[in-house]
Length: 574
Image (cartoon, rainbow, N blue to C red; front, side, top):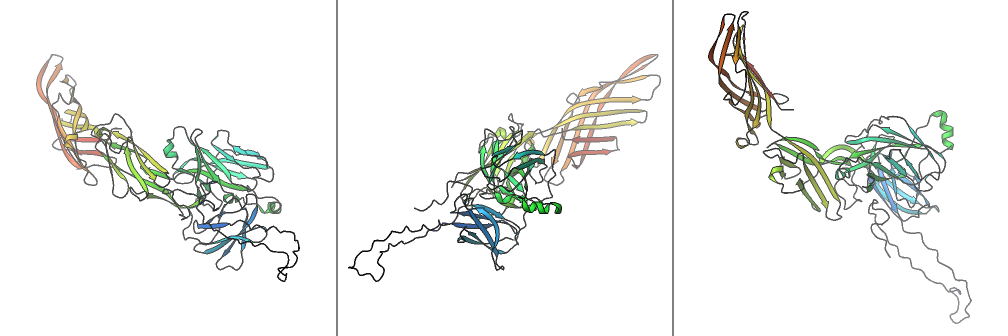
């Protein structure tokens, strides 16, 4: 019976080629070739045919210019095989590692770019179990400076019987199969600053007294306030001594404990450098190993959060954040997903297309592909991304949630990204002043205004605003004997018969504006002197007319000195 194409033991292993061998067994009589057919039958002891070794398969995928990932099948867990390598220009095979024939995964590093290599698995009896050939790529894996370690070191004892290491707060745990370590020692865990762009939270450096014999399971906890769909687009990455970073496929997600889990291959552990004074001792004892573990955002909406004014527009694009070396062995997986540890080649933002054969993709606003007008509208673009247009009024539900969903129709795997959009009132606030008169006797008219959008008169690029606010009238005169008081000194813009319009043209860059405001009202000027007082009617008010360019930080400002000294200064409300 043929083995299944995708073994049930691990969904993370890539699809491997299968081979089938047919062995013809023949039974032999005991008389030999010269025996007479009619002669006596000489009894013999029957022999049991020796079973051939199971058919093994070996496959290699070029991870970058320096790495390959090898996967195999057909061995027996616990049985040791030799993994050997030979460059195309080399004459002999060299030992890469002694591997568990049942492990099925190894990453090989330190290779030359654009070079062919042949790998083989050799059984304990010297027979070759399987061979494969691969050529490395030309790209260099992403490297970063050594991460900065934070805080104090947490030291934990390890023995061959140790099955679990965990930080006290439960943020990280390592589960290890029996027999992972051959000796007792100490593990060290320490927080470190996450050095990767789009890294999530702090990472952890892990040091072990020796390279574990089996793959370990790493669990990292995420926050209770984090959106699960967003978290499931994150990945766990490990950093090696050479500065390269590897993204690990998710092994499991424990929603109840808020844990992301990955399998950490044996081959990703790198030996710690030893001082020359310790060299002799290091040769006699297993070398310590170390790596860095961080959580990183693998996909996101750009931007992930946005503030949009009413009737404003904002474009959102779903992206894959890191370029990982593709491998044809991982079939039927969604964009950016992995089935084997893969080196990060570089950090970029690659757009995820709105349509792709084999995938169902859609945009949702507040859970609907046809959102209620009160929430705004969405318009998917031809290639990638969507444009959100805010409603004419701030919605009751605020912020609103935008989502991008992609489902692989072959395996049902789902990618879900979300962004939060806060809709704000489209307004300008500020003051306008006019000073009329001469030094020692002048009127100051100051309008404290709020300009609100007139949605009926506005378009996406030409926005019209109407004023509201209050007016102050201050009369100043240099008179040491009499007092001069003007009334009213304070009134609303409505009572001042205020009329105005602010137009902002956003079709140009930078945007341009035109501003007009007029106001007038009846005033009474009262002069009180030691010998009596008198009052007289007067007219209060002012007119502003201005145009110009909207300044940096969305500022509308200006000043003139004739025919009256005038200033205006408007900005967005905080």
